[in-house]
Length: 239
Image (cartoon, rainbow, N blue to C red; front, side, top):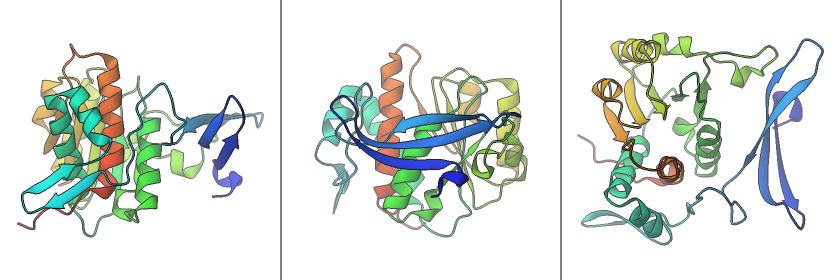
């Protein structure tokens, strides 16, 4: 993707900084000065957060689907939440077929940049155009490129073949609930990843709740497992 479109992908091979990165332009002010967000892609050099490998993540057999390789370690870290995360990722990625896209929304205090970028990378790598995510924003800065200028107002016009994925580590708000309810009335599938938000859970078709008593790191691990497992999830049986 050309830099003019708002993204720059690069590989670094320095002594202190190595790996694959993407720079995303978030806004351009009235003077023409740009602000960019740096994201470290999933690779062996990523540190500070958990980046399990996607390749070989799933193994299908006559008894269903099991994890393989390094994924087992991270699901063991999470305990029962690890199994729930795996099932959530399969629900998100296993419903394959015609789709007008995946809409990802956070809360005003938290925009799920990393989640959206990592899932987008996986969707591209595995040819899952139906999982190519669009980040919905509560406030679009002046000069934001078109692909980062889609507002939460899009939820009120969601289509029946769209999925709204809500990521809320903060407890949500009444406005968020209203917008999710609007999307559900439009017929969109609602999936939510949150920290014990009962009202949000009640609006969801599929939900994954990380208990508030668990450390913040567990919520980060959960997000990364979802982005890694979803693009390679086996198809769900047709009902």
